[in-house]
Image (cartoon, rainbow, N blue to C red):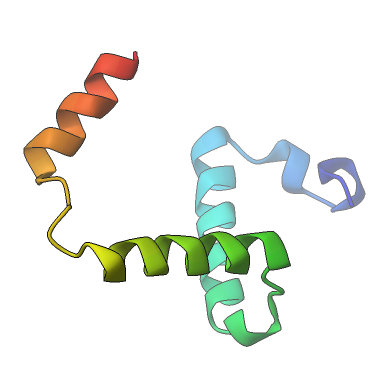
Length: 73
């Protein structure tokens, strides 16, 4: 489905479309059990959980995380 297939959406202003997207996301959250999670995501989550459990003290502080993100730019 595209915007052109939904009557009136193309005429909305950018702020109105943003609000529409927020409303759509909110409606999806209400039915999150119907949103499939890809196996690759579940596999990655399991890998990360095992890594954390094997060394739970090896976490970054928020400052370290922010510095890493900043240095990537």
